[in-house]
Image (cartoon, rainbow, N blue to C red; front, side, top):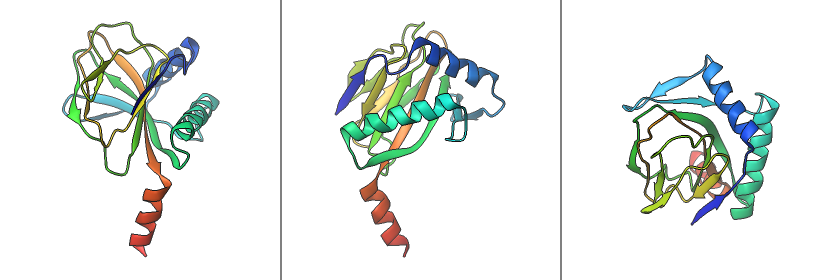
Length: 162
């Protein structure tokens, strides 16, 4: 399952998220290709509450038993990529919202299907089942990445803890 939805965020919302990211002091650098991320929580600005509400409605149209585990703004600096991988087994779905598209490259490849970044578009797919990667971009690439959990997984985990 690969779903693309245009205009999930407006240009203004995308620009705000990039500006928020760039002016934040809470950025983390991780992995060998120096991706930079900033997790946003429900107690942050209203815009993030709105985005999370849209993402919740979006995933519930796909699977009513899934919910957001976490979301983060991710920056891939010029020339960086993410190799082919699967997401954690407890993340049945993954969404990527493209915040900019003023570059060449930077495509998301899911199950050998190339998805072109388009500002404001959301891409959702089975991240734990479909191999996916990010190609190198000629300029900084910004996204909001979201990973979801399913209620069935949460129930099984709680039963195993007891």
